[in-house]
Image 1: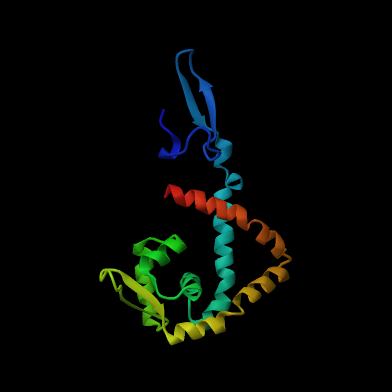
Image 2 (image 1 turned 60 degrees about the horizontal axis):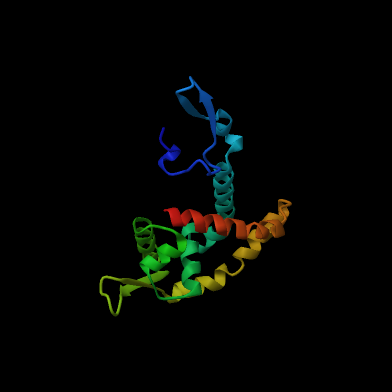
Length: 178
């Protein structure tokens, strides 16, 4: 019988099986139905937490005129201006089909601009405009506002920070598979 999902191996915690013996000659493997319960899905917890955190950012980003994904692009450029489109996509783990239209929309907002690469004319270098640089000053309070929001919900920010290495490890290992 083939591997579940085409890639996970028997040793992977995402592939849990029960074994049923039909006869001495034939053994079938049946996925344990218990694993199909939503409450047993780590992926659902990660997805829901991500979605709720994105929603929590919205009231702080709306006055800045940007979305959460645009905020991520801006943070990459605030760290290091003048980067190739592909490098920004790699940093955010976004494909070219996602990052290119996103950058075009941000260019229309006047936050950034593009130019050809000096050595490779096919390469597009993205850089901040004065408006994009000014937005950094306006966005400086967003992390504090988010931390205050977590505190107001009785969420210990220290516990969130403590799971960052685990999430970094998960992201790193899963992105290697992609």
